[in-house]
Image (cartoon, rainbow, N blue to C red; front, side, top):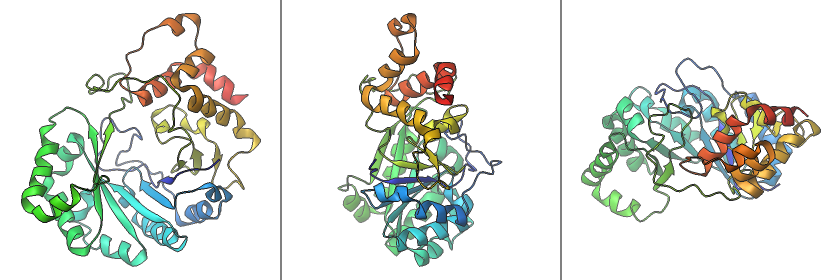
Length: 310
């Protein structure tokens, strides 16, 4: 299989601890990929299937495992990849030398997560200082905005602040389609506070996201989707491990078949294969395609678990 890019979840630790984090990242988590793990990633034959030379470093907060991040940026650069680091940015006020060390290691850009949950924890002052240094050093920085409606003015106020403080930069970047990436909110639990505020319509079709990117978890397993970490026992969905000579050995064949079904038929394929006559006629209130898929994987946990175990 060919993959468009590589997504590496470097750690599941984060100081923000968002209530709706799909990774469940909190300060006390200890999952991490160390330099030896990263060597295994870049020596794995699966990288030969990448047709895009692009890596997203994420977590948790990847700066919480900074030594591994620096090592990984250097390793990626020597291997011909461009790196983008997805970060909350809260580390900047205490670790002013981090960007310098990363630039010494290799090429990279930053992508800062912006939504009301992050802004409440971090505030805008630190992020504006971080952005100021990025502008001064020529570090490309972009933003990911998760669309939730809890005090949504905080996000627009943040960008207005950028417009006032760095008008020339704002004019230039506002023409860049990569500058602000809007992503839908995907509820990760039944009591999600933002579960009903999406205006998107659920499109019951095959999923182009499943298997599009090669996803490496902080546990060393290889996954077909970056949204699976909110599910109980998510490691059973793995397609391989970074220590394997290749990702598609026999023990992962059922998981590969499951996500081939999702790619071809989408959430409806899960209903038809694992649901009952009653569930097939049931109406579901999903916000979007990812919400539908994850909800059904959770709903059909037992039959899917039996299928994956063979």
